[in-house]
Image 1 (cartoon, rainbow over the protein chains, first blue to last red):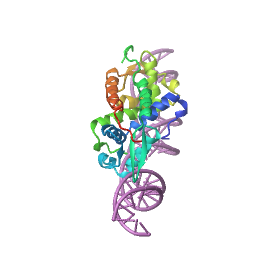
Image 2 (image 1 turned 30 degrees about the vertical axis):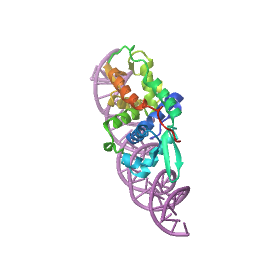
Image 3 (image 1 turned 60 degrees about the vertical axis):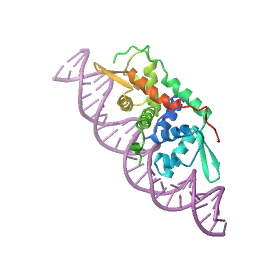
Image 4 (image 1 turned 90 degrees about the horizontal axis):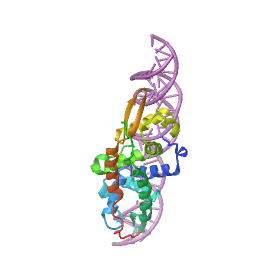
Length: 110
Length: 110
DNA sequence: TTTATTTATCGTAATATTGCAATATACAAA
DNA sequence: TTTGTATATTGCAATATTACGATAAATAAA
């Protein structure tokens, strides 16, 4: 199939997996790290920094934009990208409620 | 291609995306949530709880085991699964260093 | 207008993922 | 030994993902 049966899961579960899926490729992780590392918006140097072809980078940027984690701003010929701060925060909250589930009280049989 | 060029990325970037990829499917999120919700190990009820066929669940469990987030224990005919606590903690630390990058000092042009 | 520069889109090939039926495996109980 | 129960594996079809060459679109500069 290749198609997840997302209708049988909760909205929360689908939200978690949608965000996680975006982080599930090292190029997108690298793009986001670069956006954080340079203390402003990024215009164009991503292709050189990451080491993938320009259409590939453009495609990864599109996916990051689709889930709302980055936003772009046209500056003449080039486009500047930066982290979408509010959405990053709410994504963190969604992911953290999942990651921070209580692990200490488990009776471990394994 | 369908094949990520992981050799051009850092170990850390690959580690983050490997963990995130596992969370990138709602069934695996649901399995983990169920492992957390029931205060002990899970033997067999996952197929009923999740609503996917038994081979599909078995495959998702295998992927969770491969990245080390769960471990299994044979109990007669059935197999009990639980969260791998130490590995869950180290996974959290890897993911959180990524998610907790400083966002406040950015000069936002977008 | 022409040319150069930058980013997006299209098309396509290679590979990965998801899901399940069929079947195998492993063990317990009768 | 035979039967039943639980999980894993195999094989396959449908779809998704990744990557990139070719090209389009949009704007700036000459």
